[in-house]
Picture 1 (cartoon, rainbow, N blue to C red):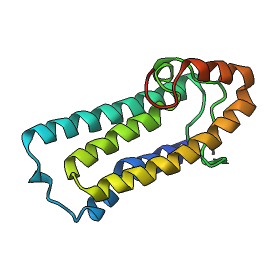
Picture 2: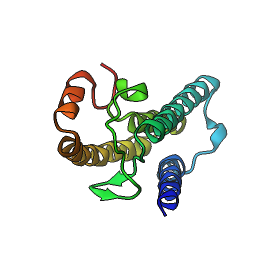
Picture 3: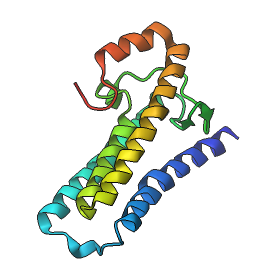
Picture 4: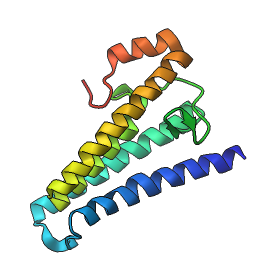
Length: 162
């Protein structure tokens, strides 16, 4: 059962963040053709999207191996088994939320590709919702890990490396 919940969590995250969100941005932007951007914009888009996905995957793999758990926790609702150990190494030494930072980079790549105010507006709303989620998650982490988490917060920024 635990394995099924983990697989469900990873699949749900992939479908929502990697597939559905860019699709919604594309639809809101008027469904522009892929080839509408130049080589420079395409290169920037590719770097941001691939780099963002790489960061998110690195964080997920690290969390799975070192934290013995899964990141899928939505507004205090456990979608998949939570980690048992506070992550402070690997990608978590750069950011307290490297998976989300990677998704932000990925979606910024989508904005560069689409280059519309609708894509930017969608991203702004997404960031606002994720800030609420992160604050909810931080309360749980403070409760679960106490002083260890407080010390980690002093050394590591929420999203972007200090």
